[in-house]
Image (cartoon, rainbow, N blue to C red; front, top):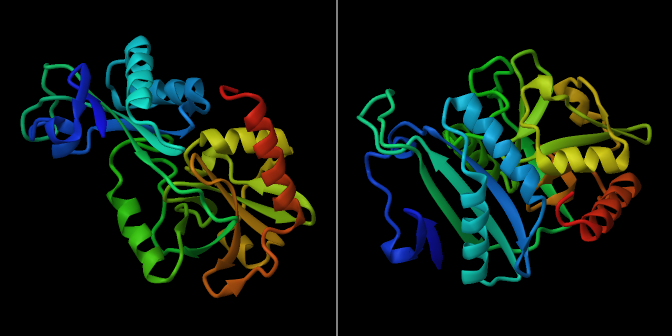
Length: 273
């Protein structure tokens, strides 16, 4: 594996980030995950735009978009895979121990590894912890992911691939790395960004292409929704066949199956929508 770090490509064994990098010591960083198929990135411009928004929200300098595109192109060319997960990480850089940033400037790492195609449907669980829709990091894609690690481990223990969070007022919010959609009486709904969920790239495209509505939804909507599906960079649109102990037989249902087909067709037509 060849990784972009320190301004150029390095072999994985030689790729180094300081142990005093603020991204490591306090999780001071932002990132994006981009799907790569046969050497082609998907929705890269949208991902770079969101990376900039996240950096601004965290008080980091705007990433150098030209450098990012050069780094992405170099890493993709150096690591040919049929399907890959490209990760772009910008950190607070070399800093003193503690929350104050240093003045050495931000760090940048771009890496790519091979990914497997997701199954058409999956199981999810709900967790008792909440997303804070009023938090300082709400809506930002930061490297502070420990809460997601804990929740996803809980999901794995229960034979699921994702955990879904409510927000502090009991509304359905999001998964550890996905957005959630529900089908009610034939209509598709997804929580609004005001719920505290991340404004997912795939979420936005799926909503626009399927006509999904942003709706404030109670968490218990999962107990009565006709169909449920997830969206994310590597899931695209993925049906849910079980939520906790509730089975949804026949998943993907007709509305989800149509959404999956529409997304595949539209994404194939435009790699940078």
